[in-house]
Length: 197
Image (tube, rainbow, N blue to C red):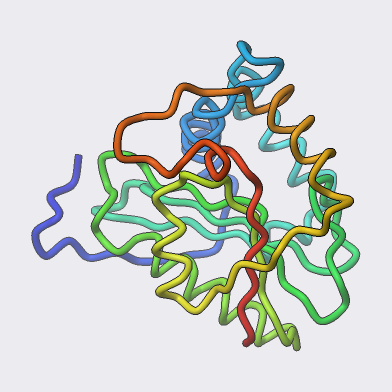
């Protein structure tokens, strides 16, 4: 684990040499979510799947970055633009969407998430986007980071609430509320956040 004292964090575009580390980060990130209340989503994350996803849409590599600390991949962000494949959100023409952001648990608190989000903002502006958005589950400690970076939660429509409940119940799983976490009605709830660029 890199030392958080005076660690230099650099952000660079994803390259094939990073695929094994991306699989590791995705697996750690997705294993905190479960499918059908018991199967961790990260069970399917591996280097071959990462390679397959980028080869399916090579443009995605141009809007993905890693955070390096002492030449070790400690964070990852994937942005999706209009016209790129995204099974969880329909990206509008003037929008950049943060599909995934993950920071190695050993590197949290080093400013990596902020630097990755700053990089995503720059990508959105370079591509002519007017806003950047993301989805986050209620109870996630990163919500505070997103709010500090200017993201604002948008209220869910009443039509989306039943679908969200089914999704969270079946694919993310009901969880016992950890002490100090938000009330049950917020925990696991999908929160859509938007920031103007």
